[in-house]
Amino acid sequence: MNRPAYPSDLTDAQWSLIEPLLPAAKFGGRPRTVNLREIVNGINYLSRSGCAWRLLPHDLPPWGTVHWYYRQWRRDGTWQRLHDTLRGQVRERAGREATPSAAIIDSQTVKTTEKGGSVAMMPGRRSKGASDTWWSIRSG
Image (cartoon, rainbow, N blue to C red; front, side, top):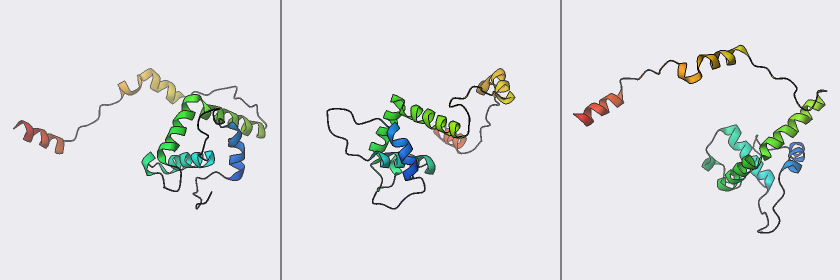
């Protein structure tokens, strides 16, 4: 990596945990030329900063490449597999079983469901601002 580090970049220890969980390059076709660590760093940057894909810094891989890997890994279950594996490791280090055995539903969730969710919410108030003025000019 020949660029200044961002706060969202993976450490060497974090990368050593994640690297074996990422899919290998497919057999045949063009060889992979992109650095997967930089792809993950780009996804982390986007996630931490909240910027748009096209606003990724130019010293990270092109936004289209980062986006393609993000979507590919989402579709093929890589993110879920990564999450489940790392969650299991964290739980085992804490002296617990790798997979959670119980779930909690709080009363707020149940009340919202019984009430009907977004259908039962109060209707939003409409301001009598520019849109009303625009309509009166248009129709007048």
